[in-house]
Each structure stands twice: as C-alpha cells, then as structure tokens.
Length: 326
Image 1 (tube, rainbow, N blue to C red):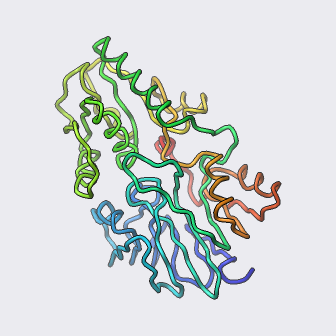
Image 2: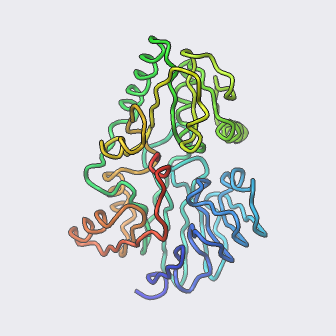
C-alpha cells in the first residue's frame, strides 16, 4: 500500500505525502494535537490543528504562530490532504483525525475511550484503510469493570474516610479525569476542593456547557467533610491533615503499578480504552493496516494472530510516573 500506508517517524508520526505531524513531541511546522493533556499538547508548534474545544485549553501558554480550531465533522484541505476531526471520547474536546488522499482514508486516534464519559463527547468510529491507534491498555489482562461498579468503590472509600473524619485526596489529571470525578461526586452532594489548575480547567468545562456543581477552590477546606482533588505532581500541597489518597486509573488492575503510584488505594476508572474496547474499535473500523502506539507490542501481536496486518511503533519518549494516572 503506497502513500498513506507509509509512515515517517521523527519525534512524532506523519503519513508520507502529507505535511501534518500527529501529536509530535518536538516542534513542527504543522502539527495535529489530539487533546489537551501535556504528553500530547506541545505548545511551540508553528501551526497547530486542534478541535474547537481543545483550543480553549491549549491556547494558554501557546508559543507558536497560529492555532487552527476546527469543528467536528468539517472536511478541510490541509498539508497536502483532506482532513476531518471527529470525537475520540477520551476527554472533552479530544479528537481523532481522518486524512484522505488519493482515494485512501487513514485515521489517527490519539487517546480514545469507547465508554461514554460523564463530561466528554461520545466517540465516533469511521471505516478506514489505515489506522494508527493507541494501545495503552492493549493487554488482555486490562478488562475494566463497569464504570458504576468502579465508581461505587470510589464512593465507598470516600464514605469510609468521612466516617473516620479523614480527608480523602483524589490524585488525577487536571483535565478530563478530574472533571469526571467532580461530576460523579458533585451530583451526589459531595463537595470537592480543587487545586488551582484543576479549578481553572473546570471553569472552562463550565463555559463549554458541562454542568458541574459543588466544587470550590483549594485551599481552604473542611477536614473530614470534603474531597480534595490534586494532580500527581502537586500531591504534596495537601499538608497538616489526616488524609488517605486514592487514584482513579486503569493501572489499578496492576498491583505492582499501584505500589509504584504511592497511593493508599486505586480504582479502575480510566479515560482510555481497555483491551476489549480496542478490539471493538478495530472490528468496526475494519482497517487493512494497523499501527499501534503507546503501550507495547502485545496488542499488535494479538492482531497479527487474528490475520490483521499490524505493527507497533515505539514511543519516541518514555512516560514519567505521573503518566500512569490515566
């Protein structure tokens, strides 16, 4: 398969014959940024293509020349091809990109989730010839429980803390997972106190029409009666209080990883697709060629055993420990 079936790898991925780099980790003349998480959203590209909602988060601190914000479903010529953005389901505004050229259709997913989130758009899946798909949890041992089952585990943890006058501290990403937890707790009358960057992101969610309630800025807080939510890299700001920490993450399925995260508890709430969802995506998209990114080669090996052309692309960077709260 010529053209869009061939890739160039250089601190990011590009279909040969196009000018658009996909979630690159180094400055590029033209980049597609799939969502607002820091491991994808480098802010010094000369021109960045993002969804209109991602632009609200991405614009702060942008050091490039131009942000091109596109609505979902709008076909447009860019970088030697026709592109369309459509929802990825990962976090609010997260997008996949379809690139069409010479009659071929290629899709890059960025991070995806097939389960409908409380605060994100529902994913769309489109038929394509070539697919680049994330496989963070592309191992058969990662089959997540029903969301409400995991949510009940989180709520029980919080209730137990409150009964002992202990402050529960939720450690999670500032955009996406934090707002899912705020929505889950706020709708049940539980007050959350948010670290400043999470508070600012939550205000943008509100501006974009997501109904979030019962949240306030941290500090101050009422010990043993409110939940504090902080990002992994700022967990040390919660001081001088009896607390227990919990991380909502898909890595809760891996006991060794839970120990590495340094939390008292972890629950399997993830903003990524699990193994079964990744398979479902492949079956619906029906690509002739699959490239996997993130994770390891377990998923691509599995696909090859099913008779699907699949190849794993090694990540151009190594995630930090903070990257395992997804």
